[in-house]
Each structure stands twice: as structure tokens, then as C-alpha cells.
Image 1 (cartoon, helix red, strand yellow):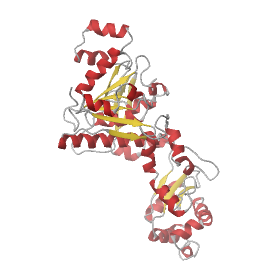
Image 2 (image 1 turned 120 degrees about the vertical axis):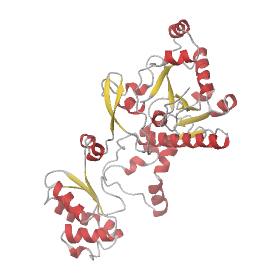
Image 3 (image 1 turned 135 degrees about the vertical axis):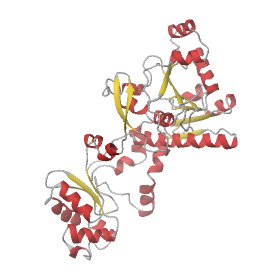
Image 4 (image 1 turned 45 degrees about the horizontal axis):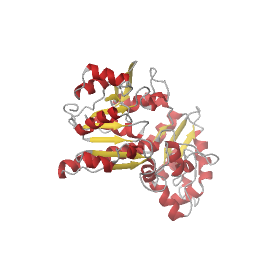
Length: 397
């Protein structure tokens, strides 16, 4: 089995019993780099993320985002012949990724320890909710549950109300660590000959991203407050409403910027040495008073004028875009980040992967239909047409 010629992971084959977000995000990034990714789905409905919504030419926005450049094969892993086919795929694979329900991999003999005995050169990657050991190993975990368990939700929102982060941040974090872990394991196998298993949990991935508020809370005695688009430990830093009804966010990072803001934007040079605002800590302690001064200045000018004035004094700023505004962002347009990708039912525009490798164009091929490549893959394994029809009739594929 080969990958996509000319790309860094060409020649690497990944088999993935994956669903939802975390594992598909990890394997899609491997596919972007040229790995052949064979996605094992349930006969019939396939990955349940296919049915989260129908907003993209009848397809799920989640599935379209996460599954380009893959091959889909349907297999009933509980059926003996389905398992036999999977075992033959694993015998030819470099990496196996799974985020099956708690305990399912062990019951199927697809846990890392069992796989090591049968396929010592295979790199198994397990993505779980709370880890494969410990008191929560058998608990189901979804993104928002993990946002709650790590304390992230308690930091997000306004003083009056908590809020979830608007993207699947725990899944994305886990997918990123699985991806980097697999790359590390491939490098280790290439340099030492040893295939090491990779394990990532959604909870521990997001726990890492909670590092700063964890230190702040443990050693400062209180957790950072929820302040909407403001920053809990820096002032001024936040979004303010302009005269034309939009919002512009800006950030003061040092005393030079604070002086320039007071003198040339707020036109209040007296504030530089005002004891309420003379230091970063003082500005945070008197945030409400400072916010009132800044908000009054913003109300006197439109958004474009505010941004131009802040640019002129070297203070970072940005208008608060909605998603539609993001889609047409001049950075994405001018840097040619959009590519056409075929999906069942149409063509969509997808963003290039964010890490550019000099001289390398990422692989951005079609999003597969359920089981679209089943016959092709079974034929590669030596099954003839009659046998494939028997497997389909028996519900194995």
C-alpha cells in the first residue's frame, strides 16, 4: 500500500477505526502530508459525524472538515469475517488509530498491548476520554463534558454567565496531540526500529491548555475572572463599541504602548502617571474606571477611524468579525489559502493546512462517501467479486 507520491508521509498507511472529531482530525492531518488513510466505518450509517448536520451540499460540516483525502471501507468489526479483513489491513499498516467507546478496543483485541503481540512494527494510537486507566477510564466523554471537567467553561463567558467555547476545543486538542504523537512515533521507529504506542485523552489534552489559569489559581489563590472579551490579567485589553455600532478589540502589552494610548489616542496624557493606572496591576485593579474612559473615546469614532488611530501608535487591534467576515478575510484571500475539494454532492472550499512546508503542496483530495472504497480495498486484499457480494449480503461490509 502506498501513499501520495512526493509528500513527506508517502508510503505510510494508516488504518483508523474512528468517529466524531478527535481521531478523524488526527488522521486527516496525516492524509494532508501524503499518508494513505483507510477509514473503517460501520456498514449502513458509517461514522456518526456524517449525520451531525446537512449544511454542506447535504453533508455534515464536521465530516467534510475532518475527512478529506481518506478512503472509506465499511466493516462490521464484531463479525468474524469483518475482523479477518481488518487484521489483514493491520498487517499491511504502519499506524492504527482508534477512538472506540470505552473498553471496546480491549474486547475486540485492538488495544495497544494486544496489537503489539500480533504486529510489533505497528504504531497503535488510542484516543480516549479520560485515559485507559484510572477511575474514569470507563466513562464516556464528549467535548463539552471535558470543557466542564477541566474548568474551561468556568473561565469562558461574562461575569453573569458561563459559556462553552464555540468550537470542539477538547477534541481538537486531542487530535493535535495524537497527530504529533504519531509523527514522533514514526520518527522513533525509523531511527530505532521500535514501534511505540501513542495514547491521548481529551481530558489530559485540554488540561495542558489550561496550564496558565491552573498556575494562576493554585498560586494566586483565586481563579481568573470571566470578563467576556476582556483579558483577566491585562488592562486595557478587550473589545469596545464604536460610533458606527461595530466592535474593535485592542491590547496594551507594555508601558510604551500605554503611554502612547494615553497621549495620542485617549488624548489624556495625565493618565500615564495617574496612580490608578500607572502600572499593569493597577490598571487591572481599576479596570472599570479605565474601561469607562476607553469606551467614551471609542464612541466618538467609527471602527475604521479607531483602527487607523491605533495602528498609527503601534497598538495591536482587530475588528470583531463574525464567521461570514472571517470567510472573506483579506489574509486568507491574499495568501491564497482556499482550495477546492470534492465531496459527495458538490465542491467545497477548504483551507490549506496551516503549517506550510517549503516546496510541498498538501494533499487535499475528495471526502469519501460511506464505504466508497470498500470494493477497491477488498480487491487489493485478494477478494473477488463474488466474495465481495457475499460479504455485502451477510452485512459484513
